[in-house]
Image (tube, rainbow, N blue to C red; front, side, top):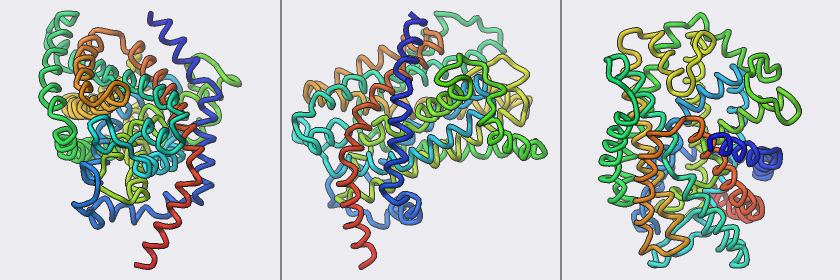
Length: 454
């Protein structure tokens, strides 16, 4: 089964998808004349609530929409995903994650703008946003098969299997094994039960409770993680320039690559690895974030697009880079066979021998649990689109069952499953976005004219 899932994931992440994600993102970047980067200051003002209007349509504020989206992207992609990229591809893999993030900022601007421009109503008459709605409202009912494809794979892609798997691994490696506790199916099932209990309380309360929890947890968890990694970098400050330069030099040499060669040899495989891990980390072009941003209280689509594009910058350019440098400067990526969250834990233990891994455990727990909340919202929204809003709560039961499966399954199987499904979610999202992009440009010109005149 594990080999079958790996083959499915590798096939889905073929050359056509990479061209669609990176080539499509670059097309959007040039089409908008680098608009997302030119208006970063304005995006921050929107995020701070300068333009909030409680009477605007929607369910949550700009800030809560971003933190809900970030609570799903700032998670194991930043801790386990980066560690996987470096253990397989060496320092150069991080460069291609950066490329994915820069291009992803443009993609997220377009997808989240469309999520507001073409909001639709669910069967209960509530305003909703997301790829499935902007496909139907923007392209027409004849494109519904594309919307159904996104929703079907979205339900699987929203399962929290990687986060749960890595949280279980972190608890086993950092807390249970060092204290002589025997780790196995029984202990993993107990951990799964605890996670199920905690998650159920939040997710059964709906989007408002999810966004409230996320808006409180995300800023604090980013700050704590930021401080801890800065401590590691300051402790090894003489090594930072060397490895920072190595990220650039090794991006084109692939000397450390340890995976299967693919797509034009080892360098092609390294590029693919970085883009794949970047997509797993910031989810730009996948279509999850537009579902959160589509619920924002605003009647200005461009505003929400500008807020959304801050996501990949915070997620990959800042948090992932810090994780990568912490792993590189401590040297654990060359001295240990650990992978995923265990490799990051080794870096923290190396820099802070007594308490480092326990502090990482706090971060991992908050990262994972906040991600658990957001993903349930995405999956139930997909089910709501397919069979009606009155039945969307059934997804929560599938979601809770997946937590138990993920806690007792190998990491590689879970990672490959989500990788492959993300690829199949990206196809309808990117196709629709590329077709509707000229309408976003038209809307942007109108909005920027209004801003300049006021």
